Image 1 (tube, rainbow, N blue to C red):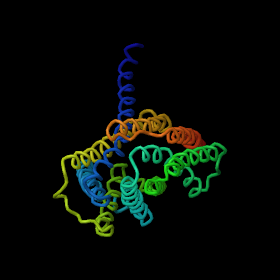
Image 2 (cartoon, rainbow, N blue to C red):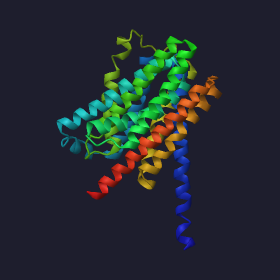
Image 3 (spheres, one colour):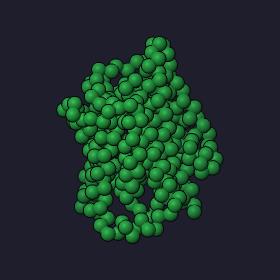
Image 4 (cartoon, rainbow, N blue to C red):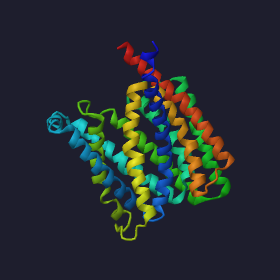
Length: 317
């Protein structure tokens, strides 16, 4: 009996350790982005990040898929191609550019409190609307708490009479909404393709759409003046914010389920606030902390109830 259970225990612990690291890595995304934006403007930073990320994803996809990918692509319908373009537009172009612009006006602390707590609620709300599923009382209560939490964070700007920071936080909220639209589009992604293949294709479309952004924003695309901190931040965003977390997250979802995996998202806001305080010196205000706690309670009510609803619905079918 002991011989059977002992090999699985270390594996289970490894998955949980990886999930904690995933949240730590994602928490550092906001800090790394703010550091990179000190050296380069929003559009240039976004394009540089995704040119490198997409290149690595494309290489992995070609190596792992080999000749099967071309055969699968022939079966992709027009609607599925549109979904992949939508994923690239909302999840790569709009989300990243809005986040970067928001961070040039606000701070990583605000982004850490607003995005991880409002994005799951936006996603649940949009899913209810798009897929015409009845809204539960838990979803309504969770949405209310989440919006109250976001309002507390925004109210702290009004108390400080900082219009620039307020506009930055509103843009950050729009980036969270954009990523929620990406999540909805992903529901229509080709089921015949693997998650790696879908992600790679959406990244390719998103990166192509990002190419004219620096010009549209009046930025000059030149990395000649980029310092070591910029490249270290970009390296972090490519490897630790994208490549490793996606692989480990998908691995954990398969092993322990999406509901238990999703619980770990609660670690991201406090970890991001701590990193922002230690590395950037951004001390959170009391009202910001209260808002973050309220928003996380809202996520717990809406998102995880939504997950259980989905599981039960699939089980009955």
